[in-house]
Length: 287
Length: 287
Image (cartoon, rainbow over all chains, first blue to last red; front, side):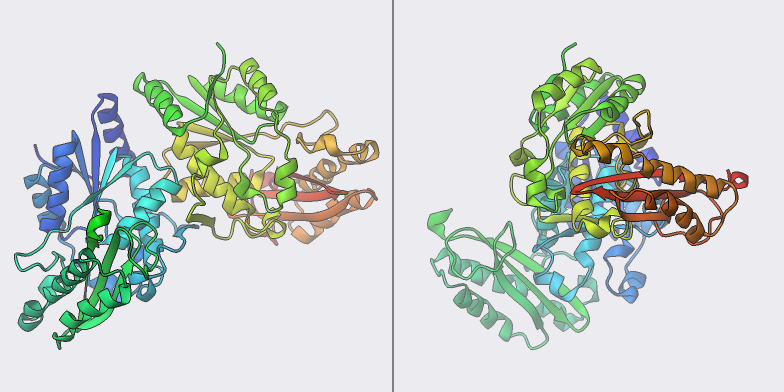
């Protein structure tokens, strides 16, 4: 079946309501387009678990802190629709900016604490924009399950908390990070890396793995775990580390002494290309 | 049919989802209990327009700026349930505080501009608490139509904007203010007035009417319209005026020169009892 392209909120609502009246389970994968294998992994998962799969494709101006970043963000809706079709997406919801924001929103949604650290520190307003558009998209589509990737872990934690605090009638499902064979997390920004940068970039994941190994081996001092990971990154002269932190998986608060599951998250730049990645870790006895 | 009392979000969702699957139209009237004729006017309206009527009864701690006000807020759930029953309410959703806030919410919802003036100026955080709980309640119940009284006009304007900006899948219906025969707007606070205060209190509505008459007669200078209304209130020595303002009905921004529909809103105190009221006005030619 061809993917149906829908541009209006009213129409996608009708389509989903009709499916629900027939007792069908509706899954939604919010994206900003420029679809790659990490998106299709979410489509495939939604296809497995749901009867109607809706992908949303919307480059949300509200979450860009830099106008040039918004302008240069890759858009190729025709090839995105082909990707949707190949992965069994039933509906692509592709609203225009004027459909999502007929006037500048007076509402702001903030998720206290969760948006301040990690990537939030260097991208002011970014997660406020993310929370706002996710609220709007989920209220527009009204899926039973919405899928978010673990690669954007801070976004995932914020969306989970938003869904909980706003009593959104949706289950938030997380999908594991998809990686290149050498470990680099998939991202539409990877193509911007030069050859030497691309060769160096898997170091981010290797550093996270080294940190995880230290945690699993019983190292409880977060400072020492971070030091172990930094050793790996120090060997990469092209890489500029933004942060490497060990945080609570739910609240994202920094963890100093590790006694249970944590998330280890990192951001690093090659020139103007910023990459992020993260990994789960827990002391073996606490698992 | 007896009103069914439901305390769990999951249960009210099930009940509403089952009704929707049968093609029924669901109306919701959010209240803080202490039900009186202004609430029952909303129940009656919902009963006329909907197949399943849900009243929510929840005293929301988040919207009280003073702990003593929260403590002393009247609660009488048993008689509220009888009122619900007499007015054909199918479901009373009566969640405990721990059901609505299992932990303190990290999410805050602000409606920029709309919450700052009028009552917002003297009740810091009040409308943030209102917007948050309305978002939670509407997401919990998921009605087709939600009913709000015009007496709390600022709340109504904020809820409308919240629904628009968050793309809530609900129609916000406003219900006209219910008044005593002498014009005083119904409020659970009216019983707190002494005899002389009660005799004076209709002056608030009379002042608003006088202002409306001036607007209808073509007075475009908002300052002069306010002055006309103040004359009425100046004759009431027991009354302390908090504000009397002419605002845009949608944005609540102050209007200086009146060329179209406006809302005239007032708040006044008798001792510690604070009363509010408002009225629609428009130059006759602009109607």
